[in-house]
Amino acid sequence: MTDSSQSIATTRRAYRLTPADRGLRLQQVREAAPTPGPNEVLVGIEAVSLNYRDLLVLRGELGPVREGLIPLSDGAGRVVATGVDVTRWRAGDRVAPTFYRDWVVGPYREAYGPSALGGGDTDGMLADLVVVPEASLAPVPDSLSLEEAATLPCAALTAWQALVVRGGLAVGDTLLVQGTGGVALFGLQIASAFGAKTIVLSSSDEKRERATKLGAFATVNYRTTPDWDVEVRELTGGLGVSHILELGGPDTFDRSLRALAAWGHIAQIGVFTGFGPHSNLMRLQLINGTIDGINVGSAEQFEAMNAFLAEHLIRPVIDRTFSFDETQAAYDELASGRHFGKLVIRL
Ligand SMILES: NC(=O)c1ccc[n+]([C@@H]2O[C@H](COP(=O)([O-])OP(=O)(O)OC[C@H]3O[C@@H](n4cnc5c(N)ncnc54)[C@H](OP(=O)(O)O)[C@@H]3O)[C@@H](O)[C@H]2O)c1
Image 1 (cartoon, helix red, strand yellow):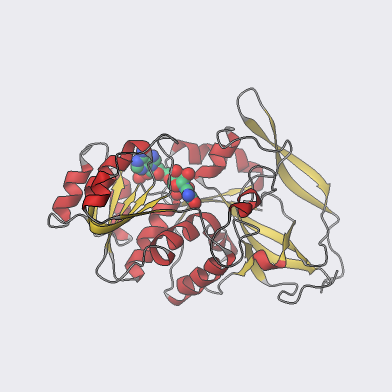
Image 2 (image 1 turned 180 degrees about the vertical axis):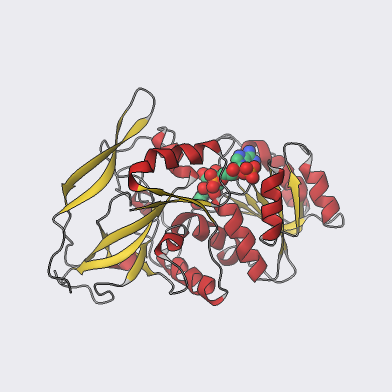
């Protein structure tokens, strides 16, 4: 192991998941710090961010997790020490681990599934020192703080894979996003940088105003306008939108199909209304549409996205930042749905 500092902490602070009456609960621990193997890097995590998935993990709705798992997929920090065979990173480098620890390059393989950070059997980022393989780290752009960078690994990369890697987003395209959470707002920001127009659905008129300030071409309140697909078609001159980030799931999918333009592209991403079965896909056939299943992205995609964000000076929208001791409050805030963009915990 090599490092540039004289003293590396021998203990770390973390949260681990332990069984509760319903689902799991967060337990703060202090424990021995991990040490990196030959191809691994010890990262001092300085900030983490929350995703809707982290609520599902805590509630036990994403399947079983190992007792004592460290939760959260998203973090950013600095390299503290490197294993003897590590060539790419040096102490002090600003880095963020990739959501799928084992998905480095190329297309997705099912074998990568269990390596998703902060779920199942794979420890996540809610600790101030973590060990990760060197190949799974992406550099953090100089343009972003570590708190901002901590919002990128899941939500931003999901929007990036959906729109850019798989969707072929182009100038003049139109996009529909559902809600004003992490994936939706990154979708809006990326689309704007491509010269595409975004329609934002939100249950809050105050958040609609904020989305307009952030660059939305139009907004629709999906509570007061439950037939939002009709409104979306009107807003696009009757054509429908060319891309949709489908975040709702079974209760929104039919409307998304009706809001989609001919030759359009749906990225199936979200589960806000559950994991149930989807609709009759006949309309997709009739309009020569496409649906892609999206599950975050690879380290290679993460690095390309970060370069794009830096080039276009895109800054993540952080709603609130919590302290490490306020972690439960951060989860509660996420569950309330009050947030606009991302919630961050500073370690
Ligand atoms: N497949 C993947 O790789 C992947 C990756 C990331 C996320 N996801 C999924 O994508 C979804 C978004 O995740 P996130 O972390 O960005 O969520 P988030 O930040 O927690 O977003 C919350 C916001 O979404 C909106 N919302 C909630 N229920 C809605 C509904 N039924 N219809 C429309 N909007 C609704 C609300 O916005 P308003 O207050 O404005 O109404 C809410 O404030 C989740 O289902 C998550 O599990 C999947």
